[in-house]
Length: 586
Image (cartoon, rainbow, N blue to C red; front, side, top):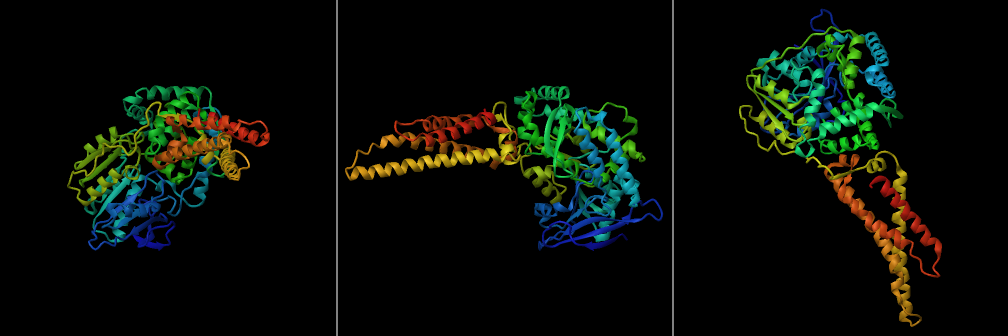
């Protein structure tokens, strides 16, 4: 019987959660192989009608963490009357050993800092791979023990160690492979299987990647029928003249200057389209970049950088090199830099490669996929689900990768299936997208909101604060002057002539109106999908400049005998704000 060992939970988890390690051989087929620790967490359901068969979940990657999702999964309907078991992959962040490879990430970042295509900059990546491999070897790691077959065997061993008779398997992206393999290896212990963003073993993931991305771009609907052509134009533009972008180094936290080619952008967009919040703005951003609006690249680069260190890259490459990267394809042209990097690492590591075979289970299987997923597209997932004896596929509109993280309807469908695997009912409309794609001309491309709120360009906020103070001061001064004149008129000292303060009052009111409209417009967008602000603002906000122009004109309106400097100061600040508007929003 496999052994388990309790541990302190490495991340915040809900009350009633137990964390531990599964103790297993690093290589099951090798006598005397050392013991490693695979992290797990068990959240016990407090429901009075608690079901005996829990849900066991593992993240994708390979190498992505899982335990951090314990609370999220326990709040899904499937976790209300069932225990939720979350299993790390061996070698991932909360297992021991954790196979991190910052040396490879450094090589990739250094290559991105040079203007040439990634495929001509692999020497540093190979050196980093060799350094990481040698370091892990000195720590006693045998990379041959980190494969899909071993990860699947960990799933089977954990069920036995925890004493569950049956459970429901839940995998996403890469872990759909390991979960399906576990179901095939442990037929008596599996009640049902959920495969979210299914990656069948028989697909050529690297070879299919460019075609999958193109097919996704063609799925954005008739309003964006020319999106593939715009994308090709964007790639050609930046291949011819790479863009220089300053971003954050994910390893050091300092500033890093990278030079992004069109092929780099292909990879960045393939990853970005995983996110349901990015999908609505993707066409607008592609079109703007194709037209040369490269200031939008800052947000893309900032979002892409952390992915290089978000998972245990040593585990990622160990699995990919042994299960996915076919050495026979090494000479084929690769455009996405993930393919280039993975091949370079695998050539340096020289691990034994074995082509995967499709696992088959007799258990009921629900396969869910996003209609706009460029990594595990519905085309291949639907076909693979049809080859499973009791498999069925549901496609969710407007969703990219990892349906359960992106779609309420997806979570509802998964929970309903786990409750009753024999039922084919879907209790929501999978054809209704969580967010509507923004149409042509609806968004005015600009990086200004992102640069102000995230990019550290605080001086623009300071300018708006000064303009707000000046506008408020104008309104206050106008009111004070009007009150004084009204009181003087009541005493008979002079005629009130209140109309003379009207330009000052209207100037301040127009300025405050402009600021209020801007604040409301940005808030309204952010409340629905704040990612939109990384690409632009609604085109309807163009009219907001009118009260700003009124404020500028009236601020410069000076009566004879009136002091010059207050009017001049107000006009200069209003003019600076107008320049800010035209730089960022025109």
